[in-house]
Length: 119
Image (cartoon, rainbow, N blue to C red; front, side, top):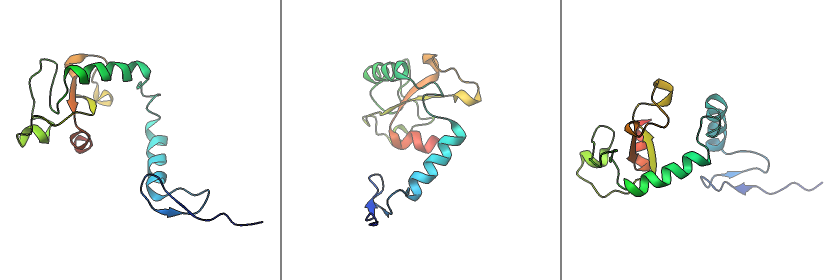
C-alpha cells in the first residue's frame, strides 16, 4: 500500500503527514472542545446577520452604540487610528462574565487585532 505524501496546512503552511493536524489545528481543536463550538455558544446565522448590520452602522474599531469611539478595548483608538475597519462585534462584558448576548449597549466594533488582544 503506497504512503500518502505529506501535505501543507492551509492555515499555517506547516508540512504535516496525511491524516495529521498541524500544531495550530490541534490547539484549536482542544480549545473548541473546552469552549464548545461557536454555534453552541449562540453565534448562529441570526448573530451573523445582526453582526453584519451592526458593522454597517458602526464600521470602525472602537465604535459603540451611540457612534462614539471608546479607547477602553481599542488600541486603534488609543493610537488615534479612527478609521481602522472593524471585523467583529465584541461583547464589552463577556457573556461568560454575565454580559448580555443581544443588548446593543453591550456591543462594540473591534478590528481583529484589538479583539484578539482583549482575549
